[in-house]
Image (cartoon, rainbow, N blue to C red):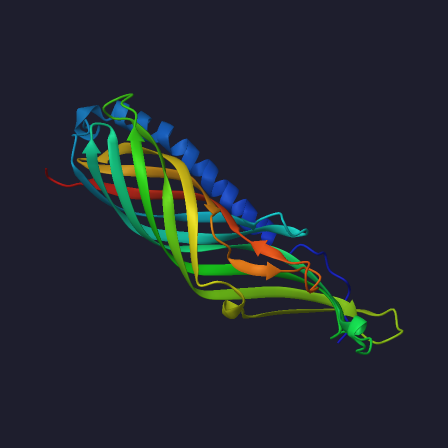
Length: 270
């Protein structure tokens, strides 16, 4: 099986990045559209927000992911996020928010393999370049402190910060491996495949979260949630990773993600 050398970047990375960009742009334009609809729909839909103690909600969206830059040759991939939340107002404009999400994080990494340094013969299996895209499927539990700005009764943006615990229950690796097919021959072969890589990553992680959201009136007391956040890994997703597979040259790998979500919020009676 002889194949031409393909680009290092996975072909799926570009459309996935485009999907994330278009989804984010769509969410950014939604506030203006919702406000315009409310302005032309009289007061029946532009209901003022009550100061409810409790709110519950559902949301989902996309994540744009990358591992830390401590290792060279890292790149982006995208994933999905979906979950539920409950928020409790603790004092005036401050509230505490608890979430339970299914979250995909990860990124791309390149590994250079040359086992001929250990005396093994030349060949594709012992000398190759492997470009891998990892998806870390996790159950994430964020705890966030929100500060809400009272700009309008029907427009409530908020800033928040906090942390999350993530339990990774599965890791999938999609890879592209390229090297010389035969010893001494200038014939390049490329193999594509996927495999389970759960054992290569830590099952438990902690993230720092900072973000912003806005709630808009949708119908009666139902609110539309637009949420943007950044997650930075506090603990390593993978320990002592070396892109050269060389002992003593490794470093810990951390996850980083930009997450865009859209959801529905329902206030509960005081």
